[in-house]
Every structure is written in C-alpha cells, then in structure tokens.
Image (cartoon, rainbow, N blue to C red):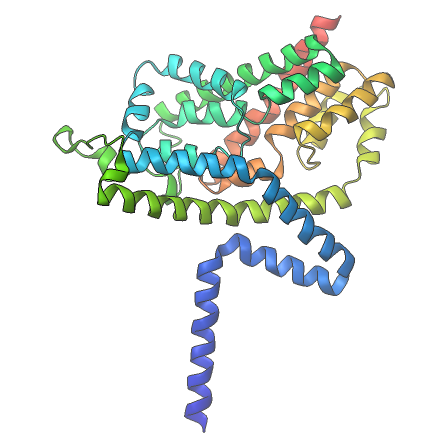
Length: 350
C-alpha cells in the first residue's frame, strides 16, 4: 500500500513538473495571481482575466505578423542578410534602427520575435537596443491621433524624441559593448546561433521559397510554434500585471500630481511614468486634458515617453530576452532620455 502511495505521489510530482515546464514561469505566476485574486477579490480576478484575454486578442495581429516574419527569416536563412546590413558602420546601423523604430507600426511586444531573430542572427546589441527604445514611443497611427489631440508640433517633437532616445540607447550600448560590459548579456533564446558564429565556409544558403524544401518547411513550423508560445507566455504575464496596475495605480493620482504647479512635475513625470502603465493611445486624452488644466506640454511629453518605454509589457518583453544588466541599461536610458527630452522641450517653449 505504501509503495502504491509513493508511486502515485511521484507520478503527481512528475505531472506537475511537466505542466509547469510546458506553461513556463510567466504563465505559472499568472495562474497563481488569478487563483490568489479568486480568493481575495473574485470580481477583480474575473476582470483581470478578461482584460488580459482582450489585450492578447487586440495585439494578436501584430504578434502573428511578427512571428511569421521572424519564422520566415529563420526558415529561409534570410536572417543572415538582415544581420549583415547591421554589421557595417555601427553609427549608421544605430541611426537606421532608431528612425525605423520610431516609424514602424510594431509595438514593443509585437516586435520581440523579430528582435530575438535578429539577435540570434548576430545583429549587434547596440542597434537592436536603439530599435527597442524607439519602437514603443511612436508609430504612424499614434502620430495621427497625437496630431489630432495635441497638435502637429507636439507629434513631431515626440517623434524626434523617439529617434533621439533610440540614438542615445544605441550609442550607449555601443560604448558599453566595446568596453565588454554587455558580454553574455542575452538569454539563450536571443544568443547568436552556430550558423552565425561559424566560419565563412559554413554560410547558410538563402532559400526564399523555403516551402519547396522539406527542411525549410519544418524549420518554419518549429520556429513559428516556438516563438508564438514563448511570446504568448510573457504577454499573458505582462498584460495581467497591466490590468492590476490600472486598478491599483489610479489615474486620478497621476492627474493630481502632474496637473499641479509642482516644480518637481518633470521628475515626477518620469517616476510615475514607470509604474503607471498608460499605453500611447490611452495617454493622449489624459495629457490633452492636463495641458488644458495648465500643465506644461513638456511634462506631458516626459510622462508619455517614460510611460511608453518603461511600460510593463515593454520591460517584460525586454526581460524575456536580456539579462538583468541589459534590462537595467534599458530602464536607465528610458529615464534619462525622457527627462532630457522634457527639459529640451521646456527650453524650446521658453
């Protein structure tokens, strides 16, 4: 009887380990949060569940597009060509990455599969970091909405700020990389593969019509499933945290602190922009209302920049690929860049 119980316990432990291994850390923690909320506040648990589900559905077109593109690059071997375009002049690569990041329609979450693929293909950290900083700040649709609510001047300045922060991130990453501080700063999923590091005699053959090759088809399927599962796990976790922040960090508090004539409004805009997640679209009407109440547009810009780059989904997306010191660099650049942009905007308005 004892042997049967011990065997049953072992099978149960193995089953739990398999479930945890399949779900991964982010989904496991998300389930733990939902279950805990179910006991503490059942209504909030239900709201957070559907909020997370809604956010995943909303972002799914961007995720699907980025996953398919990343899988195609890998299956065809075209990721080597993309990587080679970033292997030349580093300043040029950083500039291109910053401008493209500010103009691309991808949010920081949807672009992560592409970032992971480029890093795995050997693209240097510096231009990738520039792209990751610039990408969540501005996109074509956000530019139009910002122009409608806050004026074309504000929209252009926000776009220029995105490019400038990308350049700051890229140049900082370049200097630190040359100094060796960013060696081994990537997690395994983003580390360059052997095909990138091997000798020139073992270069990958580019198969643009990969579906005509059985190995290419298999690679595409494997990469699609792997990246999709990886990204969905982390997005689930990040959107769940976002739903909780929206509840427990009320916007009224932000309004009262940033809407007053506080001499520390600009630093507070950075500090509040980090934990108080407001995506670029949700922040537009809030900032518009605060400016009408007398808040400086520079404070609004600072809050929008800090909130976009350091939002929970953006930071967790970066954390899923990078180790702590690279994530710390990302956050420092976000804070410094948004603060500097705000002060420069103040000088411009003076």
